[in-house]
Image 1 (tube, rainbow, N blue to C red):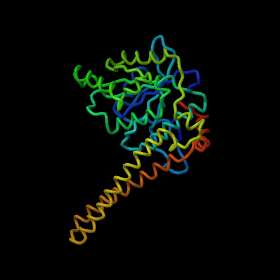
Image 2: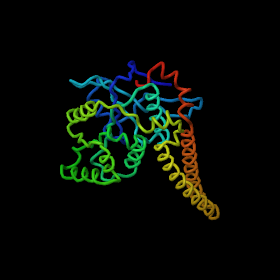
Image 3: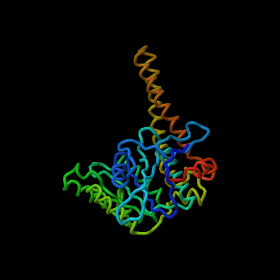
Length: 315
């Protein structure tokens, strides 16, 4: 089902997506410009895809907010999940976000820009942040990076000198933002709350350009499965890596379990058995998550079109 708000967005409206890892400041950013309640620090409940299977997708994924700034036409900011959700797999996050984007594109609704938020206080750009950025690049496509703003947040948590050093590293390293900047992504500091955020929004609105993301083209025009898209390949690669790791750990636990039985150490045997069950559950979860990406947009659209028509794509 779709948890819908009262307003609908048309193809003439200005829509800007706000992305980044959990805790990067997405909800705080949006709260500066909307009269609607924005839950900060928790996941928002809105666009949800369901299926006959109760495990097809989770809830609390994507939500849009009607916003205003003096002198700027009405616009919407879209809050989105990061690929580091503690309750859901990256595969499910990708499928929900991609479904939202593909549904928008199917009805002629395009983004006017994307704001990618990154915490300047983060010492390392690895793990969830690095994975989030790689998937984001593949989701956008190189030709659309000119519609991306790379904005750093949480400047109050670092000294000016430290922040400047990290900012330079982000801009100067191809592992981070250098290649995106070379393809016309713009860097901003989101360091003055509402004021600096307003500069970002005015920049994107002033470009007067609508963008079709790579994943929208792949799903709707090329009719790829979610798994075949660039972003899907990235997510599946990470799932495969984790699955291989869990399988290796489980094999080790099986050997330890056999040794415990020989030693007749019941406590050790029970602990190892618990670890084994945990790894088995993780492997099963990964296999199911990957399976949910092996469907086409056309197939999914048949199932959700009625929801879309009743509530509009952006709530």
